Image 1 (spheres, rainbow, N blue to C red):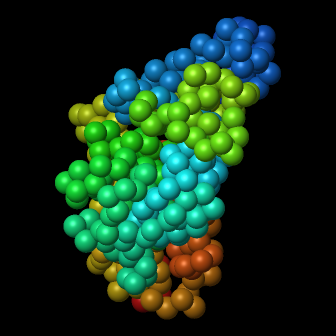
Image 2 (image 1 turned 90 degrees about the vertical axis):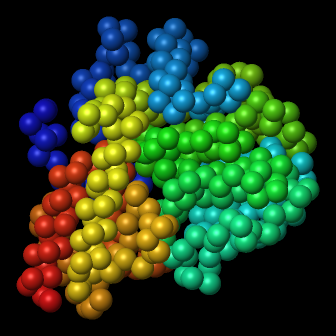
Length: 373
């Protein structure tokens, strides 16, 4: 099994994304019988002692890795980040005003969904730049009576990322900040003092699709609209320790294995989250420096907004797109085709992507340019 996993292709999917081979190997070994229980995790009662131990370890490891403060609840939910676009305003808007910072396709979707439940105001947008830059926070038009401010910290389609979470208090706002950090979570530390709620689907850096993580400050609970379904009411879910309904048990188990892998991870003298952040920096710098030095490939995102996680790029001669993708498949570099809404290419280089995978992509780009340039 180990040799087979080491020979796997490099998967650049934007999500569901690659998982660490070590994690997949452990899950395979435990598939039929978890720790002598006689059961697969898929077959366990979510209220049984076996699964409760899995859940408690996963929650503890995640809190440790991200240094989540004690006044934040960690909720293991379902529905993905897309469902949270409705669940957040159902819980926090109080039917009033909500401000949005629109920086790409996902924050656009979030704002559109929230309009069903609240008075939505676009406080800032980078649409005029083609979603290639970030709007300067000092220019945001925030309303003093907004129930919360929403932003997407990393846009997977357009490849822009907030490398520092804005401080709303410094901008004159007392509203809590809500961040969709689906494709950023666990790739770097987060300044929780600037955040009221963070949410994200697991299928980028954490595990399989089907699990959604919500981190919510205690004082934001208890304000759900009357129409909010009980299973989506953050207070109800928090009080039941994510067991109000049957949670995505296997997704939680897989996430827990990823958390344990990350706690063991070391790189260039660093450990755990600091190590994975440094490797993510190195991977992104390698790929962007290659793009910047190329006459054939181009990335259009402003340098200070470039995502470490999702790198969209384009061939100057798009007639060569199919040839490039064919060469990539031949070299076992998978899922590099860009999102259908923007075209081109996209390399998603989440935590599980090793530096060697990015180097393999860079080698292909250089060879392809030498042959076709």
